Image (cartoon, rainbow, N blue to C red; front, side, top):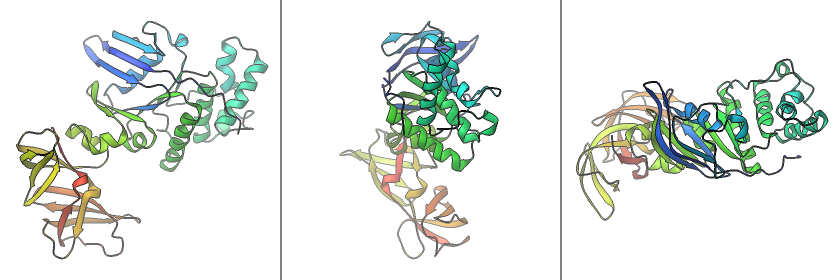
Length: 356
């Protein structure tokens, strides 16, 4: 496969950047550094400010406070066309009357490049995204996944320092989303471009990111690697937003030697000390950390309220003294049944003491 040249992924630095619409604070002033050549996801529920933040990086929205640097250059007041960034929109925004080749070459021709040279670069970009030989087609003759690749090729052909994605996979079905996110990640690593990627899909963020920035109420709730956010969330919101999680209450009895002595119902556990003071505490339990024992055991007593066969595993809803628990178990052949009493053990690696 012929590739575009390896790109120079620029660092993106936001210093006190915020956005206000009248009395509404769409993005509260925040600081964020996106390292060059990495893929960083802005993740959060609708209305949290992630798309507004992306559009400020793109230059499609003007920051009302703070400064924004791309590759060390202050671009705060520069229009979108002078920032050397490209954006892939949720709708793909392809010209329906133009061929795929002309769609990809459009930005180059608009900037003054000769049509022949622009088409040659566009052909390379199409081959880079796996669409060699598709240049003569119209967008309407392409599948959703192929149109998404055309949109990526059109962005990449401009050789941007930063590539921006706004919910790029939301129009695709689940299986195609999975394959396309893998392609985007592989392409980013191969070309070395800096990518800022907006999504509300936690699985998508975990799969593609070097770093995830979780946003809530127009500000950053927590930023870190996928593993850090999943295993060391700093709040109940981040813990429950980053994948499935059971939120229950327990009690921290005390801390010593980096460990917290925690009481959860009738079960006592030693967990990593997260700096939570002794007393009532919020506990997050990952579904895969819940172990069901049908005979004997000294764990929590629970009753199976629902058992759902999922092929590769079984999903359980349990009623216990600490509250309702959702569990995922690989026991496909000897499943517990609704109404059955079981003993629940907890894997300490999936039990986290967090702040509210």
